[in-house]
Length: 170
Image 1 (cartoon, rainbow, N blue to C red):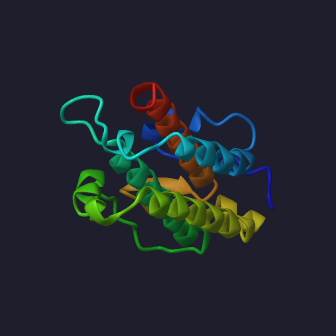
Image 2 (spheres, one colour):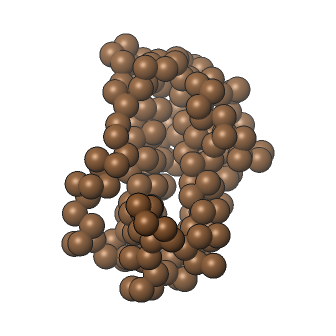
């Protein structure tokens, strides 16, 4: 497993997420597996539906958003690393949550899905060679290199873990 990535190239919008990564993005992704496993132990039927304010997502919606986003960013990393020349579209996170069939998804399914997606992301990143990490492509109308995505995924996850601890489970 690669531990040290080339410098990530990403749009300024993602700086907040990338700045949350201390040290190796890959190591942080690995550590987050355990952190999220511990977090799921604190989630119950009552707080999974909790919204800390009107118009905000429920905890369940936040968790599913985290999974959706990791899948999308991992795909972007794959496409760019493999040399895809077709621009990769953006996505509407609210539309994805609106259409996520959340009434039929259990906490266990969310936890299992997160574990599977994270393992898949880590396996994917382990297949990249040095030339793959520096390859650039366009996603959501902006230029990225493949090495940006482990940082963005880890930082996005960290952002939401912090929000969950502060606003949903506190």
